[in-house]
Image (tube, rainbow, N blue to C red; front, side):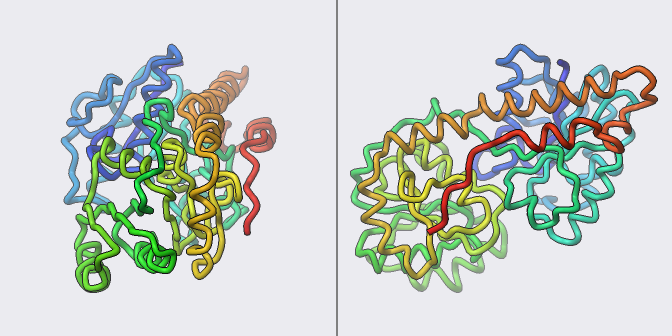
Length: 372
C-alpha cells in the first residue's frame, strides 16, 4: 500500500526527547517501510524519520504547541501534499475535520488523548467519514458511543532496547513534571520502601517548571536524585538498572508508553491500576498494581520478579511488529471497502463500516491484567 501519515506540527519525527505520539508515528513509518509499503510522511520539515517527507511543511514549532492556527495550517498543507496515497492515517486532532480530502482515499485517525466530553464531540463528528482507532480499552470505555473501529495498543522497537541487570540499588521515575504523572507519590513510595529514587522528567512548559519549583524541589532530599530530561540511551540505562519502575499515575492515562519501555529493559512496574495500566502490567508477573498507599510494600516483591518474563511480555504484546501488523489489517480492510463496486467515495467507510466496526473491533488483543 501507499500510506500517508500525518503528524502534528510541534515536534519533529522522531522526537529528540519527550514526545509519545511522535515516537509512535516514527515507529509506524519505519515498520511500514520494513514491511514493504510506501510511506509519505506529513510532518515538521526538520524531522529525521527515513520516510519521504511531504514538501513545503514548516519546521517544528514547539512554542506554538496547542495553538489551533498552527495545527490548522499544518494539516491543510499536509493533505495537499498527500497525493497518490491509498490511505491516510492522521494523528492530529483537527485534520480529519477540516482538511480537504480526495474522495476515494479512506482516512483513519487515532485517539491519542483521553475521551472527555469535548473531544468525544469531535470524534463523533469525525466518525461520519473517518475510521477511528483507540489505544486502550479503558480509553474507549469512557465514551462507548464513540464508534471505534479497533483498539490497538502502542508498540515500540523492543529488540533495540538493552536489557538491564536491575542491580542498581534504586527505583526510578520517568515522566513529565506534573501532578498527574505521580512524581510526588513516587518520592513518598521510595522513602517508605527505604530505597533511593532517581527521577528523570520533562520540564519545559511553564506549568511544569512551576510545579517543580513550588512542590517537588523543596521536598527533594538525600533519598532522591533529580536527573532532568534524559535521551533514550540514558533513559534505558536508568530503567534497566532500577529494581523497579514507579508509575503511580493519578489520572486515567489512555496509554502509558513509558511502562512498555521499562518492561523492555526487563524492569517490573509498580503503579496504580488506573487507565491502561492493567492492560500493560501483568499483576504479580511483570509488576504490581494497587492503591498509592500500598505501593511501597510492592517494591521488594517487584524486585524479585523474573526480568526475562518482563522482556518477553514486551516482545510478544508491545513490539513495533505487532503494532504495524494490527494497523495494516485495518488499512487493508478500509481500502478494500472503499473500492467496492458502486461505492461513490470513501465516506462509505465512515458512515457504514459494514464489516469494519464489527469484525475489527472484536479481534482479541492482550488480556488485561488483574487489578490488585
